[in-house]
Image 1 (tube, rainbow, N blue to C red):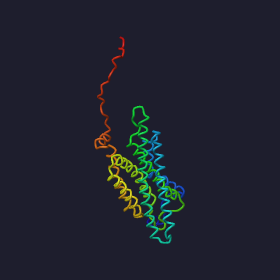
Image 2: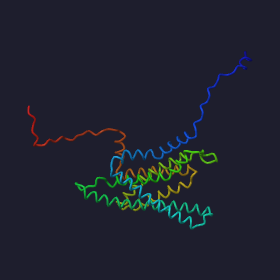
Image 3: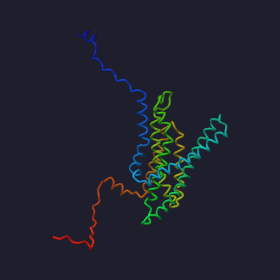
Image 4: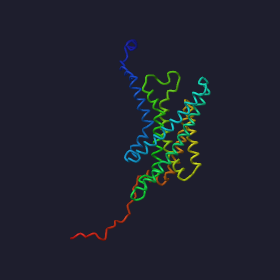
Length: 289
């Protein structure tokens, strides 16, 4: 019996499914990372911007202002690189850090210029409106402009990474971190949110002349940009960046007029009873019996 059991062949195992082709794996990584990076921003655009033509115009114009700041920063970095010793690796790394700092400062300068432009546009819209009020508030302009800065910044920071995720090749085969694509996607999502929060805080600080708020926005932007140089040590860069994102989000929420009462009302999902009294005109003809 034991001999028969030992010599009997075991149950046949079903053949393992073939691995997916590299193109399918690359497409999954591409769409997954793109969804993480731009999914929340796309939802914000569709729900809060796309239905209003004026907001769409502000969104596109804000992206143009950010592109101009990037162009100037790129020119400064390009000239400084070609005027320096290109074989000195330490010097080139220092110039890269310098270029990132210049880019951050130029972005904030153009954010201020965009604030001044929108302020003039707001006054013009109020003058031509029938009731003397602008159809869009300054806080809404701040939100849309910050969202535009975040989207276009995220596109330029992650578009090449998404293109490489399609393949060919596998991240980590030479000892690199296999989490490169996923961490880049989460970092891009944080940058989009940060620019949105910075826009709200920055515009409110300019309107109320709170210069210390402007300094904190610029400082947090510089710190966030500097933390990216710690990659591929992602724990040291991604965690502090998300802490800054949460802090800026809370600050922007209260700056925009939010309160704990509004949060509780939203979470309770209760509608307030309508206690208004319906008024009828004295000139209304009564119904005949």
